[in-house]
Image (cartoon, rainbow, N blue to C red; front, top):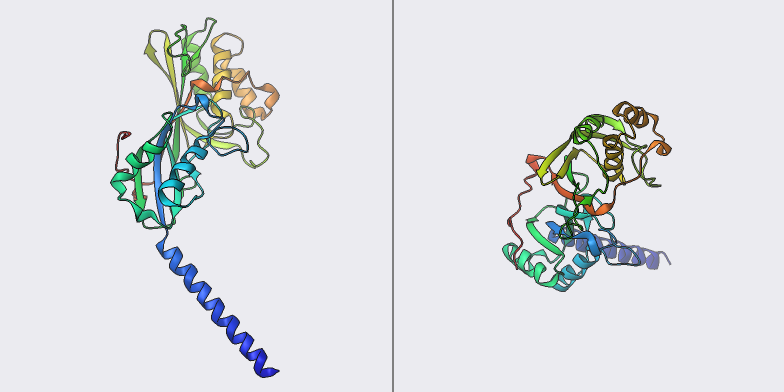
Length: 290
């Protein structure tokens, strides 16, 4: 009996060592594919995969599976809601067959499989598996486009406001949100979010000509619905419905009942994400290749 028990233990130990060795070898083969993509969010229910509806992540996953024969987890630097666009969203995936095609051919290969409203405009293949598109990010930049006039050719990409407002008041309101604050008031509820504290490094409006304006906002992180809530509040201030002082009081109150009507999603664009220089995140392609 002792001999049989020893034999079983020996077999189990051999199996455990073999499995560990296989796992180690597999991990050694894994690489990280970092992609920068642009998309028109008009016909998507959001970036992340959902049970129902078309998503950017779902389209990208199908293209990756066709090329690499595996369906990896896609990790984005941020999230965008239905109707929100992106010019420089960054995602990473871990791949066991990353060397199947040369890195310089990846944008063309993926773009050939992706729909026309999604394009890869940058790629990096890393030999490490430590990089994280979300947690390694230093700051993210969003734009919001606002217009006084109605233009059917731009209606999907800017909020065409049908009422008068003072552009100088927009800038006064924007200054309220600079610095580190708890943005509970100007955000949507998220059961998974424990902290609503963000540091806004830049928040300013720029005139684009023809009665059009662009908000540039840069922060270390953004909470759910934050930019659209801020735009709605700033526009209320520009219309004379609220003062900048009232916005500051509402911000410090951390009470969503003191927010303003949220701005529509189609004027919002995720512009870019910045990483520490020492991580060496450098993309090989500057334009989307067919």
